[in-house]
Length: 115
Image (cartoon, rainbow, N blue to C red; front, side, top):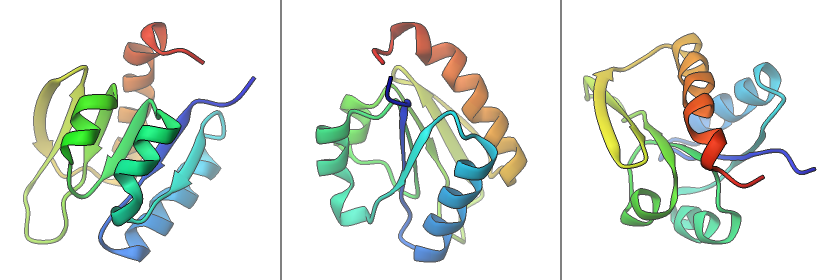
């Protein structure tokens, strides 16, 4: 059975790479893929991920992805989380809090998400 797909993108390559590798190591139950921003919408349409972690949210992400975490670039004070179109803002979290969010989001999304 394939692992649930999660996509990670950021305008900063280092951010993308670090988050992708950290999540792969610490949450091996997911298929975590790094995607450059220009290819994110196509990756969402073709892969149908359950979660996207990104530095900016596109209309494709909003329309097709059950859950997303917005981790904006430097100069911003707020991150955001959305589950089934319900968005909440929060302070930019450290990695361990992002991992907790991933776990929390999966318990919410998994029952409705086809594997």
